[in-house]
Amino acid sequence: MRRLAAVVGLVSLVLLAGCSGTGFDTGTETPATVTPAPVPTDDPLSDPPDGLSEDGITDSFALADAHADALANTSFTVRRNHTLVASNGTRLVDTSSVQRIRADHSRWMVERSYNGTYAQFARRPVTDVDSWFNGSHGLYRLQGQNGTEYFVFPITGASGPVGRQQLISYYTLTESTAVSTANGRIRLEMNVRPETNRPISPLRVNVTERTVALTLTETGRVERYRVEYTGRLRSDPNTTVEGVRVVRFRGLDETTVERPDWIATARNATAARGETVDT
Image 1 (tube, one colour):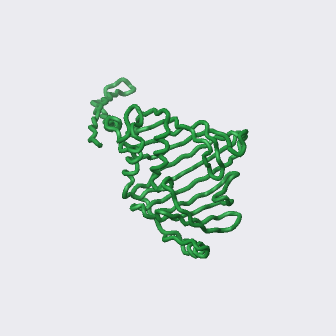
Image 2 (cartoon, rainbow, N blue to C red):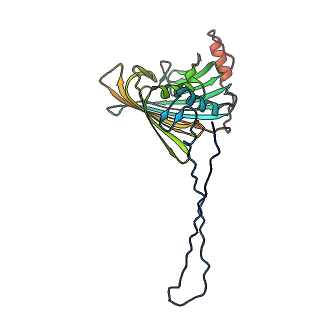
Image 3 (cartoon, rainbow, N blue to C red):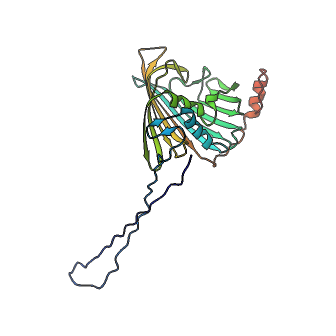
């Protein structure tokens, strides 16, 4: 469901007449003419993407599909940042990652860096984790205090490159949605139902409040979303925490993905344990 938006150009002519500071007529001046750039008047909500209306989300699956369809047959990059801070100021989790996806979505790679008190992956202390995916499995390289280790793990639907399952979760669990527009983009501000016992890195958090703010194009493709949540650690209910997760989709049709140079070493290491995967 798309439309051709009409753009109305508003042209203003500003005539500036000047005179000399001496009070004498110095001749005829040519008035200056200023022509502002056209002001766009198209409203992305005049024909909203499937699953969305001016009043809120009407179909969670259709809206998530609009995002996934917009990224089909397209290379792109996803940048993520996630922090979790305790009430005493301790930074428990501080991670960032860059995910690069091929146009056919058959292969993608992720580079992660870890900080914070709980800098862990698969119950191991780490500083960096690189991974290479073939659509069903991921080959991982872990670097940290224990040196370098390699593993193979299956991936889940939520780990797919376009993030459709995660968006469905947010859209489905929303309790209230404010819809607005700015600069030709759609903005959703949602109060999302909390999830108890939610895994956050190696920690589990009983989330008490959660908000999600998304910026979408007129087609329903998500450009950016920010999740803010509060809760308590399951292992220590007296410790309250605040978390922020920011996800950005960038580099459409400009992202390149090459097989990492550590893949051969990783395949040999995992094959020695009887784990094989076509990468």
